[in-house]
Length: 491
Image 1 (spheres, helix red, strand yellow):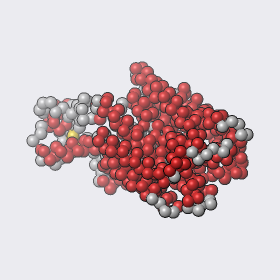
Image 2 (cartoon, one colour):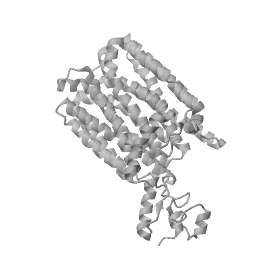
Image 3 (tube, rainbow, N blue to C red):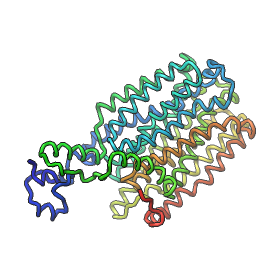
C-alpha cells in the first residue's frame, strides 16, 4: 500500500500523518508530488510546451481557415446550384461562424469532464468528416447544413486552446503563446481567400474543401502524437484512480475534484459561460468589444470579393490577393503584442505588483483601437472613389492590426482574470463574437447597395470608434470591478 506521502505529495520518503497535517495536506487527498513534479504541465520542459503550442496553433489555423477559404468561390457555388439570392451568398460563408457560437456551449463543459485531449481529437475527426461532406454536397441546403456542423466541431481549438495555454504556461509567458495560438482565428480567415481564389479558378470550389480536409487530417495526426493531456483536474483524477487501484484505498480523491456528479458538472459548465457573459460586466463588455470588431472583420471578409471584382474588375483568382493587407497587419500586430505584453508583465512581476489589468497596456490598446476605425474609413472611401486598389488593400492592414491587438489582449486578460474558469470565459467570448461574425455579414451587401461603400463602411467605423474606451476603462477600473462583491458571479 502506498504511504500517505506518496499519495499526498512528496513521494520521496514515508511521512507521518502529523507531518502531513503540518504541511496542510490530508492523507487521502492526491496532489502533485511537490512544486517541481514533472507531471504537472507547468513543469514540463520548454521544448514540450512549445511543441504543444505549435501543433495546437496549426489546428487552430485550419478551422478558422475553413470560414473563408472558399469565399472567392461563392459566385461559382451560386451558379452551380442556381441560387440568385445575395443573402445566401453571405449566409453560406457566415453559417460556419454560427457553428463557432454553438459548439463552445457543448465543448467547454465536456472538456471539464473528460479533459482537453479527447475533446480535441474527437472534434478534429468530426471536422474532417463534415468538411468532406461539404465537398460532396449536391445542393445548397446540404452545403449549408454541413458547413454549420463543421463550424461546431471546428470550435474546439478556439474554445479550449486558451485553457491549454493557462495549463502549461505561467502568467508572465502567456502573451507570447497566446499570440502564436491566436493567429489562427484572425490570420486563418485572411490566408484562406488568398489561396482559395487561385484554387477555385484552377480546380473549382469543391477542391477547397478537399484541401481543407487533407490539412485538417494531417495537423490532427500531429496533435494526436505530439501533445498530451494538460488539464490539471483530469491529470490528478487519473493519478487518484491509479492509486486507488494500486493501494485498494477507495477514499483517495483528487485535490481538484469538484465533488459533483458528471451530470452536475456538465450542466453547471453549460450554464457557466452564459452566466459569465450576462452577469459579469468584465466578460460582457470585453466580449462585446471583440464581437463587434470580429463581426466587422467578417463582414469585410465576405464582401471584399464582390467589392474588388465589381470596383476593380479582379478575376476570381487574383481577388484573393486583396486579403493580403489584413494578413500583413495581423502579423505585425502579433509580433508587437508577443513582445510588449510579456515584457510589461515581467516588469510588474519584478516590482511585485502584477495583476490581470496589466494585460491591457495603453501602448497596445489605444493604438490598436484607433487603427481599426482609421482602416475602415480609408478602405470605404477609397473603394467608393475608385482610388488605386493598393490604397484600400493597405488600409485593411490597419484593420488587421486593430483586430488582432484587441482580440488577443482581451483574451489574455480574461485568462489571467478568470484562471480557474478561463475556458468558460473564453467560451463566452467565443460564443458572442461568433454570433456577431455570423449575423453581421448578412447585412453587408445590402448595406453597401443602400449607403454605398463610403458611408456603409463609415457606419462600421463609427461603431468601432465608439468602443475604443472599453479596454481603457478596464485598464483603469478593472481591478476595482473584478474584486467588487457586487459584480462577483456565483459559478
